[in-house]
Length: 102
Image 1 (cartoon, one colour):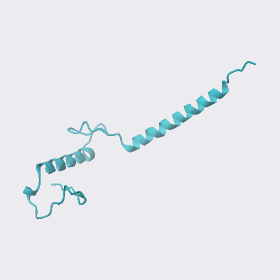
Image 2 (cartoon, one colour; image 1 turned 90 degrees about the vertical axis):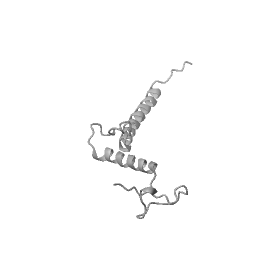
Image 3 (tube, one colour; image 1 turned 30 degrees about the horizontal axis):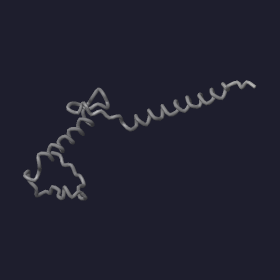
Image 4 (tube, one colour; image 1 turned 45 degrees about the vertical axis):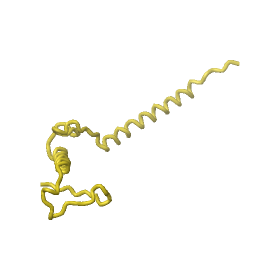
């Protein structure tokens, strides 16, 4: 079994929490579905072997996310390349000055 503890105290649409006195009649089908999908996604993402590190297993195989660290690495690679290209363009434009005829 799984129990997800979420702070709904400031949400007026969800004014109560499950207690130890609750039984199955206090749990909605939607709540069970959301909890099940959340636990299933967690297990697929963290405990099942997968050939593609960032691709989930079925039924989550459409769940593709680029990790923040990979995004940061891409930015760190492209920014210097763009900066060097910009500096080279400035240097080139200064070296090739138009000739003024008097």
